[in-house]
Image (cartoon, rainbow, N blue to C red; front, side, top):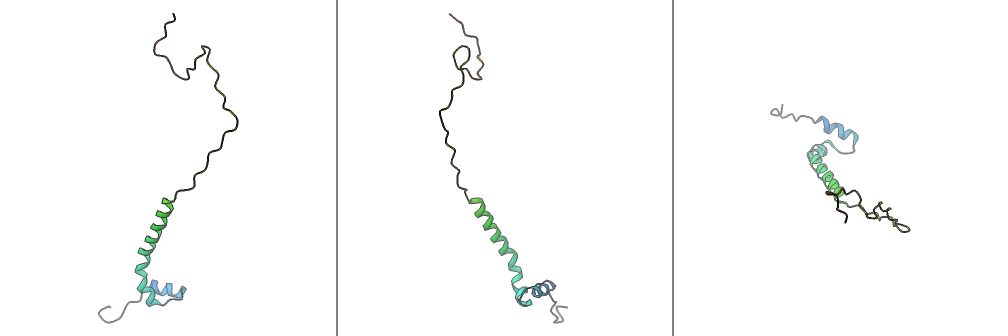
Length: 90
């Protein structure tokens, strides 16, 4: 058909031109550019959103003094430490 001189009609361009106030010729001309440009714009938006550092929240200030934990029966603070060898008492 292309050799006979008949230009095939683009069905998508005719549908888009029916909805938008743009001619079929303009749509068929700029349609191949839409996808690459939209991918570029979306990529820039995502990079901008990913590079944005949110404002840090300040930590709440403690009120009053901190209490110390109660000491063990021996008077020393041992925590969760298990001694390797029992100590010799003199």
